[in-house]
Length: 496
Image 1 (cartoon, rainbow, N blue to C red):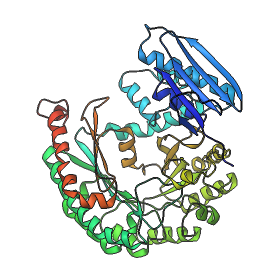
Image 2: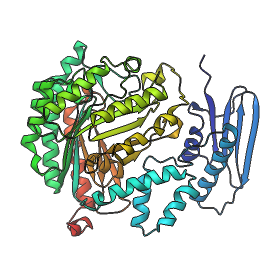
Image 3: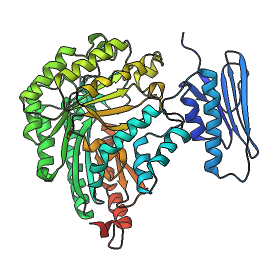
Image 4: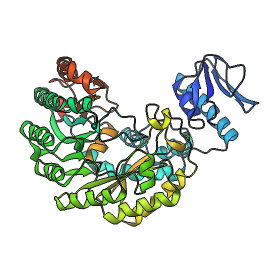
């Protein structure tokens, strides 16, 4: 029987950072206004002269406190509270989060920002290891990735941008997935697909016009999902043909298409991707265990993945990424190692290793499946096999709800770094996003610690189609942003 969630009460000035520090130790925290009369609870309190953390767990109560001063800056007060919570819960649970107190999703960006501000390498190390209490091993990983990214980011120009086109359809829904996607097997969804592709092509044309008006230069193009190859071959031709007409594909640094599912990616579709200009594709097994594939709702076998990979090579694809996930239901340390060894044996140019993240909208959480896997850190330790095979880490990000507060790391053979992944994670330029659920991220050009604004599309395909005029009208926000920040007197204009 699943254990009841722990009530979390934030009092006084305790806020976001304290909450997410606590969630590193207890993933099932549930916000409450007052301390319940019974049951497990965690109170975090921050007042003018004192800060306190109180834990009632399995009928036993414990607490810790520290003095505070009204003269403290908000940042210093917040750090002191998080440190109190962190050390108290570490003592109570015996858990040592590998990233320490760090709650942010972009550790590598801290290194880039500190270097740009003139910090010494020792100051950067102290920030990670002493201030955040990150383990030396995790800091070394972040530092290595920053070194790989440095020459790539040095070539970034203020008025570059990347374009994302989203396909919110899949052949089936994986249990861990929380993305906006519809399964293409039912008639209602099938009726949406063609109108959706038609609208998406119109939005991409509007995106092109806006980008041209703002003087933006397209750097990378990414078709993601969902599963883009859940479209028919003809619909893929329509979409990719539209992109070829609208944009100068020869000037792109990278053109990625996710072809993640072998149960909807066939030889013909792989040829279409190659014919219409894709330079990088993803074929994402997640695991090579048939039983684990069944556990997560996949309707294909490990052999289907191997066959799909062979067909991709036969179609001429010479830059392939494969995703694996550590911590999937029913997987084991040895099973994950075998999946990793199988992926390495195929010699894809990229292998991305994710840690399972428990997202509220996923079936894995909704159905109250077990939410802790003790072996996930041991699974990730096998990434040393990637090092031995000649891969190196090139990008990293973290997510809330990731098992054991771990991370997702992209590995590649030298020279095959996924540029879009680096650009979106390090927020170096604007990402224009088309399609249902799209989130355009506008980045102030040419400025460190840039201002970022977002423009959202409607979340679901039927909303996107039904209110498409509003989708197009929102493109005015892109022009307004660049009118404000990229005019003739802006810093960006002088850096071109």
